[in-house]
Length: 315
Image (cartoon, rainbow, N blue to C red; front, side, top):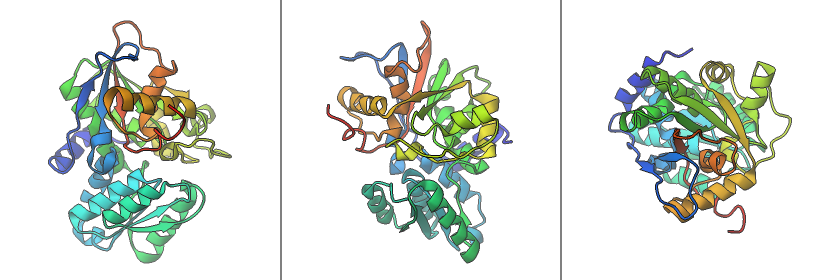
């Protein structure tokens, strides 16, 4: 298990290398959210998501001679962009394996950041198997998108910023794919001695953590039925499951219709273009999957930029 102070160490390591993203009080709206809601705008992070934090923290922790041999990962897009960014910053070549389901725009952006892009398999798990094989065969440094302690600690720096700006936050709503962001946020909350609750939000068509929590161990989903590819690994890992069991209050489910509705709300009310997965925390509020208590102050992490949320259904 990670110690909470590892998130503080990650914050020091990342200082000046990632953006301190804004915390937006939603305030007046034509179609208001329930309760008092703050939006942590990680969609404005370098590369477009919080993933730059964890990937860069991991790569910075590697000896220069190791990272210079090359980095490799598998991604639905956002984590790969984080690894490509880390490689660009530190002068390390990066290769990213994508599943066939990854949006073409993500592949183009990865190449623009200087990464080599290889497509393998139908889902992330297939691409990940290819990335692991390349790491073993070629001596590359593999960067896991959610089950690496340094990656988790880096993601947790999101919450350190929130708690510095708004120490009275009662609840964090956090999108859940493999569980790296939720794990890191929960550790950061403990590091600062906050009593804030952490609530995860999963797509109903990819309830990876929900099913593993029910089983008491990581189990693979037989199928994925969501368009939110950034939140759709078939299996979590033991590290993430243990952290979520220990520190995350609950996980709620939202369907793709609710994700699309939330993405359109973020565009119309806030001028933010986000992908389906990036809208998950707001979707939980709008769909009633999470209902704040009177006076509860909620921070919803808007975790990924994109356009698929706007195209997901008619407005």
